[in-house]
Image (cartoon, rainbow, N blue to C red; front, side, top):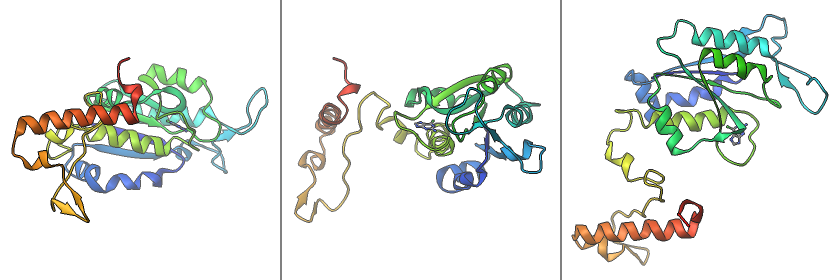
Length: 229
Ligand code: 6GU
């Protein structure tokens, strides 16, 4: 998968060079390119923002650098890209979204800062690719960079080969609509706390039933919104 990220803070994405995604890049499973939006400006001050038409607080990102950046990262592309703009005003990004995007050959992420990007950029981007405005949740970040880090990690780990043991992907929170069951390792007794005896029983059926029940209990307690009414 090819990923292009456009941001005014490209060094934030240095963190993608470490851990699992760093290995995936080294092995060629992930081809990540980070671009500085200011490289697509032409004035001495490398201006990327301006005051909003109609007045109001804050600054809006100018369309021209975005137009040039999107042209550059989508030009000569193998497939029509999915162009993601992280936004608290977007659709919710979920595990299902991550699964869907993990099959795209080319993802472009456009990170907005300030009060947002000139709305015409989204319309123009739709000529170059399939545009998605995606939100991590109901809270506001200062910009899209941290949200894109989260999305790239959630998507990248679903690409075959990125996570060493594919079985670890199926039994985790959100893949079956429930929260994950609790996990334990040795020692069986630690600081007066025991591991649930069923896990030491060797009875695989009993273990599976207990884990399912724990998933339901936890989901009911912590995330009742995930359960059918
Ligand atoms: Cl995707 N962007 C920003 N700026 N804030 C957010 C978000 C995204 N998701 C939740 N809050």
